Length: 178
Image 1 (cartoon, rainbow, N blue to C red):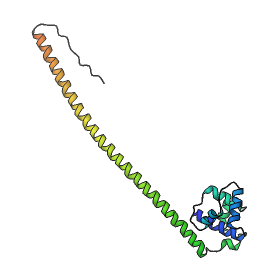
Image 2: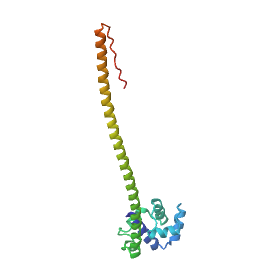
Image 3: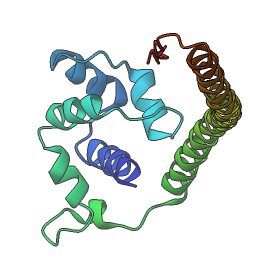
Image 4: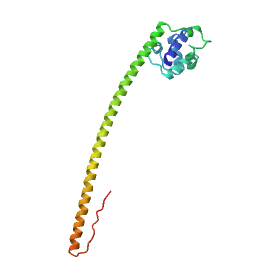
């Protein structure tokens, strides 16, 4: 992960330049940040997450760029101390950082799962509502057709009775209000 590489190289470069965690924190504050010595130590031991804005300020406080720090582990012109394979404490810090990230991702995964379950319940509720609405629509549509048929039948009977009496037939029209 880029975050782990950044923190590893930040720590190595800080040590190489003889800058204490307290001095680095002081420089970050001078750059407009708010990190304290304890924050730098927690970053380096993997118990605090690195924010992008803090990474930029830390790099600036070390008189380098984020890109330079990230590439310093791979550049042939880098100091050998920056190219060395990670030592045990660096590996432990990286493992702690990954452990923290696993916990964060697990928590996010649980939240996403709860959201998914809630969304599925909403879909099921909507499906049931749709089925109920379709059934009601079909029921009322069928009833309307039957009522219209009966209505026209009755109008026809009324017209037949009037015609049998020799009366003038006034056709009653059903007005469908839609």
